[in-house]
Length: 285
Image (tube, rainbow, N blue to C red; front, side):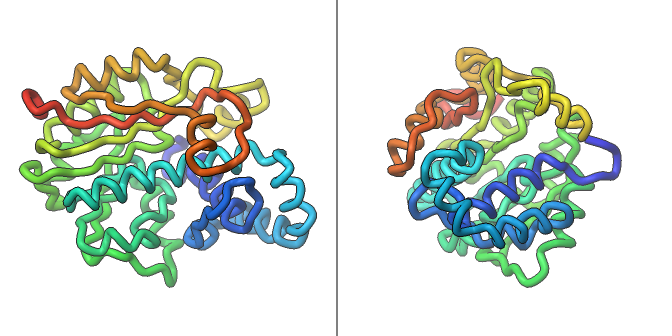
């Protein structure tokens, strides 16, 4: 990321969620009304242009031309499902690592009794807080935690924000690890494990080799100073989690997500979600 500037990939992700919320997707039942509120120009302008051509664009999307939008919608829905399952088990702390323009604390009603910690880079977090406007959190315990994953201590930041390492937590790490070095990922997972009491869970969104796609997308990411640094095989991601003290319990990609939620399958992709939990013998290190 460029110093002092909010993440552009975070805005891109929110834009795609906003498109899916408007119906530009083959994913049935997807809703995220928070996404459009978090967009600033030029993304908000692009969304308004899309709305003007909505009827034709929605028809095209439902014919299978919305791969990127579907991917974000499905990814969001599966993480939401994991989160709700954790809350149903009694977990009352949620940490969103690299929260970006995440809207969960403003739309998931089951978070009403939980403490939510949104962790992110100071520039992105400042941008988001300026965009919240009329959005009201579903929880009365929402904490913004400022952290640069490459430099700062996640453990200290969460401690100061009031996170309790003796109570179970559900950690969400979406759309981040592919932009971090192995050392930054390893260090963050170790800090997460140190604050993960028995009964805690973690969902990680990661990218396998080839995810950066063609030259155009790679060029755009580098132009934004947000290049992909870490495309990792599933075996590597699993090993990193196990090294930190977690046990991987589920791993899936878009074909599985599409089947679960009744959407069109666009075939195999390089973006995946891995669900993990603390191991009873060494949840902390």
